[in-house]
Length: 595
Image 1: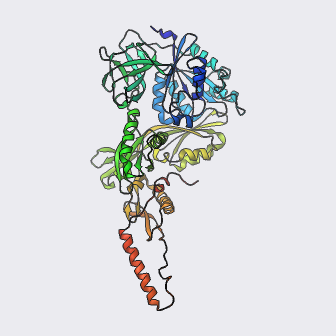
Image 2 (image 1 turned 90 degrees about the vertical axis):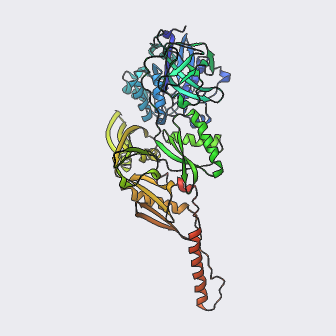
Image 3 (image 1 turned 120 degrees about the vertical axis):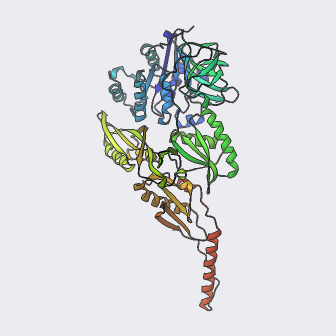
């Protein structure tokens, strides 16, 4: 039996590209968990996308041994889109290593995760990484970490995960500072599910932290949140490859192979217990992850519709947050409205669909869901402008807002406040955690943050600004549906819900952009932006010219007039019968604002 006193469960908190995966690599090497000849960079990042982008998308646990202690690392995603997964990983650990880049310091998303770790009452070990770089300022960054967490800058560890310098001190610090688990061996099993994956040959594999009791292979299991029953057909630990064991003891981390058919049946945060002697109370913190960014995904060719549907169903087996429903557009044909945790989540799914399933996709503007209240008092959510009921039947339309934090150097505070004002944001406070660093908190409509806010922030702060956010609830606003009409017909895929004060500018901008990408026809094409029955902006795509009188050489002027009249009648007939060719670029051209 494994003694809890010899176990240390920890995770690594860091911003994207601050060296979290590289530090994990050095730990695996130093503890001889992976032999040097089998080592590769970012070993715990399993997807090609993770390696290319330098980010962690899917967390990967691993067990290591150092001086007789079992060190269980639960790797965590660094991006704000996956904050729920981060929170569940923190709940499965007693300690956290906080990694900050010696050239960049603390960033906003790191701060958000640090607050989560403090709330979870974890022991935090501060570490300054990349001290080998010429631009490194380890002392300054160590001072930032000391101010954030309390304590002395001298106590902050200084390492280079790339060269391995100082990594042994981190391992020793885990043993010294991180407390051992304090579960009870002799009570019914309670295991926290901190991740799950789907294997088409074996079913759903749960990644669990045994909080109380123990789990033996072959036991009947049940999830307290969903009430779903199954069997632990195999259990094991990660070294880092899965290795089967007979028993998982209190405090340990491992995997459980079940007969569940989808990760939706076994969601992150649920409590695993035995069917024979179930626990009376579930572990706290479980919630169903709800997507709050939506976009239309359409195959470029109608023949790929079934292929897209099959691909989404396969991805959904491994991603409980991914939700989709069929959608039909007059212009784009049949596709799906898909829900995501955030823009990065959407980008990853799009890339996986294109790479792994060879799909060509047209993606509409990302939007969010809105809460509508009918005159009768009934409330419901709509996910796209095309679903918005007639305004006369509604008493209110509420949009989701976020609470955001931007960490930036002092010289760019004015620029950031100006940027917040452009998205209808309300600034809450400015704090100065460091002499030259400002933390700006604000509230803003989620819809105005969805497209290019992050890019504009990086541009206006010369790359120094970092941003994190969390949902702040729904607020009723003066919202309207902005429709785009091409040749008098509403194009649903281009419709948007927005604040009335922004509709005129957005409509005029959309018409201008569409005029640039819609190909000219033999007849004039009218473009209009409208709210209700009121036209806010209008422009025309000029027709292609054809000189029908070129063949005339002299003669009566009436011959020329007859030819021009005949051409005019022909263009009218063509306009009645013709279809306007709207290229895919029309649906992506609105994603970026002009600088």
